[in-house]
Length: 177
Image 1 (cartoon, rainbow, N blue to C red):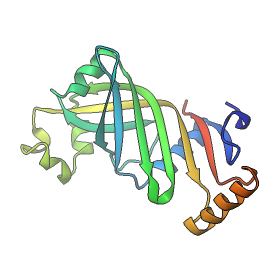
Image 2: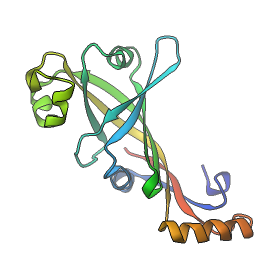
Image 3: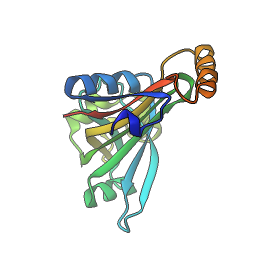
């Protein structure tokens, strides 16, 4: 997608490899919840909030869930997932595509475990209902404002006056591999 196909008031970038992973890492830092969308058996989409692991992004995102949850069954039928992130206070928005897999690797559960999960798994990290969801991210789209709220307000006004000739943010496509 070229910048001409995108909003005229946004700088558009194509990023890949290490540069793409670094961009995603910066955008998701500080965001604690994302929406995970899976494909249902009838082809419709099912989204639900998921707690992000506090791990540096390296192309993989990790989650803990219940073995018997709908998402586990949906992932077994179709591995394609979308993860969406929003941090309106920082004007950061991100949508990532990837393939998910599910396992019950005890070492990974131990690595990912924190006290917050006790609310969902009262038996602790040895709860037999815990499953690990691994999402290997392949690509994504992002948009972020480039300045403070005051500067953004001035840029929006300038963009309105100039018919969109003043960039108010950055958007792009990211290839992770």
